[in-house]
Length: 166
Image (cartoon, rainbow, N blue to C red; front, top):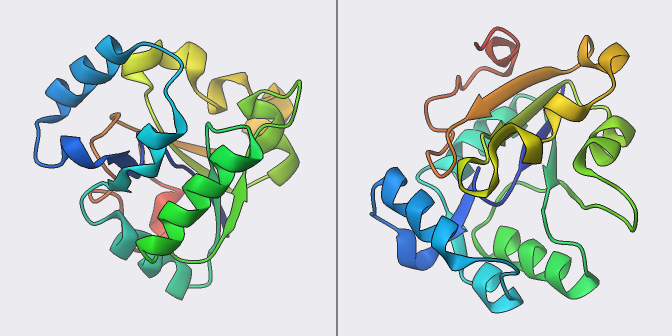
């Protein structure tokens, strides 16, 4: 099974937000504006116990793919460094090339499951990956949407159970 996991907002948050209620984090991010600098993303930390959850999936043979919102080589390297620092399971870090949208990256990777957040702080469904995937590919990909900054701890440990998530 191939699992594509969005990084920012799904499994990573800014270190200053640790311990804050999810709703407060969403409010803070909405007020930050755009664009956020690389220093902001360099200060990312895992949300709750997401590393352990992804390790459980990886131990069962799942191929882990990560998708970042970052685009420049320096920014992508920053997210790669954060994933390494916090010992996330190995997996390819995917990003949008020039002219690409998230759905283009996901369609190329063709995962069995996409785990992403609802993008509440940045515009909702319009900013998400799965809603923009070609209709003919949606039947091959299971979408799991979690609340932004809410983590993935509540998702099943068993990878086959991911296919039955609502």
